[in-house]
Length: 313
Image (cartoon, rainbow, N blue to C red; front, side, top):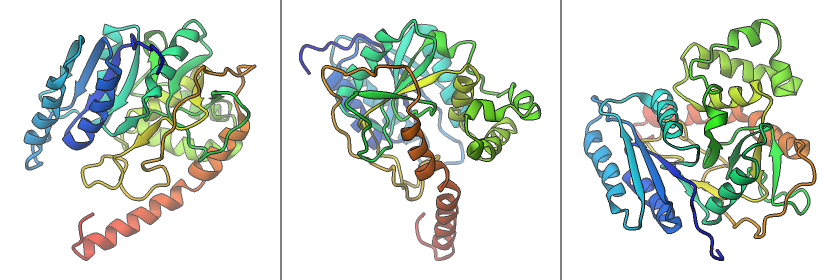
């Protein structure tokens, strides 16, 4: 990777999976960040053996063997995905002005760190950009020779952003949703009539606390402020957490599970204009959002039959 030096802080969100955590930690260790911030949730009292798994997972961080300022934010009690991740990122941006953020099942290509760092520096003062992602869900499709494109979507399996974008913008409670809903302005945010129903249902469930997650609120915050995301032209993150019994959201089958990664172009080739790549976004909508309800139903049916038959789910 030339003489690249990772100076951007890395935030690592962990919980109870020592195996996936170790794999991601190995890649972080190769990058040798100067600052490593660890966010960890506490064990659930009704889960046998979880206290031990949480302790094993946290112990992996003790293997830092390069010059590094290690900061930890561990909860003694279980806060759940929604509260733990959102408050953890709050804490991260109280400590540092920008950060690269990885969860314990998001395995990065080595060039992911360089890509994020260069984009963070280049677009630091451009408020039109809300975040940088390492995800590409185009399944090999490229749109020209640029190393990245701009999207309305917020993909968080390995991403980066700035304190200035998060603080005062992110709202875990989604308090502005009723105003958007009742004024019929959701279409103005999602920019597509076909997606209004899907996102309206999602945001309503998040607002009513029927979904224990933090990331839909981040998408809402970026759309509310009219910000775009930067997505790489090829995939830099492989999610290794699908199909596991301890997974929170990535259970069942998915075409996005363990996608192959490939390095970003060096030097990075920049788009001519800061405009959304509508062809790429429409492909993502047609091949993920539009078929998501059917895929979700298929996984629910599969898991129900497995339970009835006494098979592991």
